[in-house]
Picture 1 (cartoon, rainbow, N blue to C red):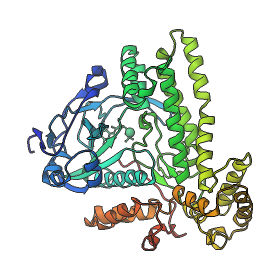
Picture 2: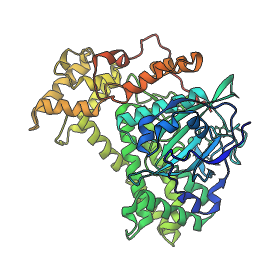
Picture 3: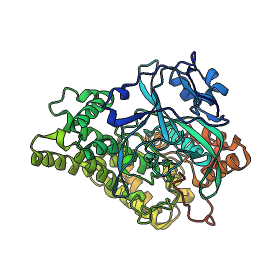
Picture 4: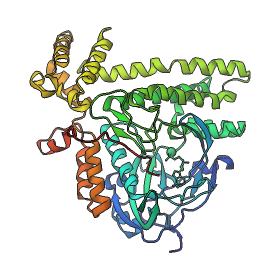
Length: 493
Ligand code: AMP
Ligand code: MG
């Protein structure tokens, strides 16, 4: 094993400020990543690297491989495993980073703060029975899907690098190991608050809440009820995030409270996948037998998670426990309205609508019902609305969809904006490209089995501009053939 050197990567632009390390000790364990045998950089995100103020020429090298594997610590890093808890499929568990190490918070030249975290970096006190490691396939998958989400304009953690470790991990079979460098506005989760709440640590809760306010919601600092404001602001971000997921057909797959980030980024790309044919009951995850996290259930599950957040915050909401519960309940009950409003605004835009009419909700619902009835491809059907020849589009030949089209076209005539403006709006809101499951599988197979990263790199490029419709990208827009088995994803830990 190579021994860990520290204070390296100088000249690469590392600029750490480790504010999390000044929070109460209960929230983390200070420790270094466990070194790996033979790190090799297999994916590297130059654009993200530069935007963090880091030098891609220095890091897209063996030095980068050493840093992004945890073998070499960048200057100023204060590595730690973070503690948290979580409701997993409804049951509460004390957790923590069982296979991740936060290196520190990189301050960009623009003054923004980003967590730099290694995922798959070895055992920690929170590993329970796990090996602390990750397999190459799932780390490449997280890189691909998170960057695709970013391309779609959806708040998400990002992926800076994947390093193959040169070690094998034992899952159902033996697989090559890898480490993903994840970049996030923070890794503070609903479960981080639940962790302190379960320990009855009110001082810790207060310190963490103040940290989150300062870091993510500075405008609320001087609010008369900052912690109630925090609950409401987190709810607003989640309402907006889940609405965006639904609008692109994204299914997170494992919306446990430890996988819900307070800053409103999509986090933890495990069994997630994008829906092809529209069906709100779609579930891809092999472990989600009851369909708890099905596509159409995601808003309710977000509200359920937020109720857990509200519970954890109770001691900060009011000194009288009954009053605190009342305040939390009242706030949480507002979620469906917040969500509905974010979702309907987004769906209007997807239909090219600039104005609001009371019947818009039923217009949207009828389209979705007709799509479900006709097993229409969600992405391509919505994108076809941007075409002047939509009436001839194959997606709109089924009777229900053809009838709906007439109603929609009448609706468009009732707004002052031109049809062209409507089409531009649709093109900006409904992607032509999503990471189709069959394509994702294909490129991951090429990379993990044959060491051929070219198809993955190509797919990443195409997905970085999903709202463009280039003729050469046509193969990436094809839905899967009818023969493809129902797609299943696995947690892949
Ligand atoms: P996830 O399902 O990825 O959100 O992980 C849930 C919890 O299990 C987190 O606390 C992870 O750190 C932990 N975990 C997942 N895989 C492993 C592993 N291979 N070794 C140790 N801990 C793990
Ligand atoms: Mg997780």
